[in-house]
Length: 117
View 1 (cartoon, rainbow, N blue to C red):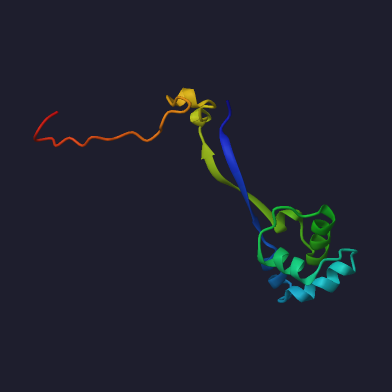
View 2 (cartoon, one colour):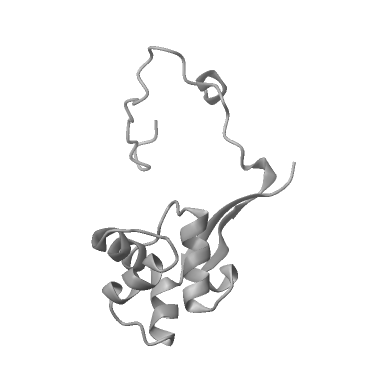
C-alpha cells in the first residue's frame, strides 16, 4: 500500500495583489466585473483575506488574467502530513479490543513501587 499523505494549499491572492499594487479588495471588483464575474464586496473580501475551500473555475481564470499569473502562482499545494502505509486505523471497534456497550474508561490502580503488588 502506498504512503498516505494529507495535502494542504497556500492561497496567494493577497500577496499577488500587493505585487501588482492592488491594495484594497474593492479595487478587484471592477476588474472581476469586466470579465463577467459578479461578486459582492463581502464575497471578494473573503476571497482575498481567507483561503477558499471552493472557487468556481471562471473566477479562478479571471483572477489569473487580472493578475497576469498562472494557477500555480495563485494556488500552491503542499504536503501537510505523511503517514506510513501501515498507519491505517482499524475499521471495527472489535479490532481495538472494545466490545459494543462496554465502558471504554477503566479504573486504574496506582501501585507504589515500594509496597509491591
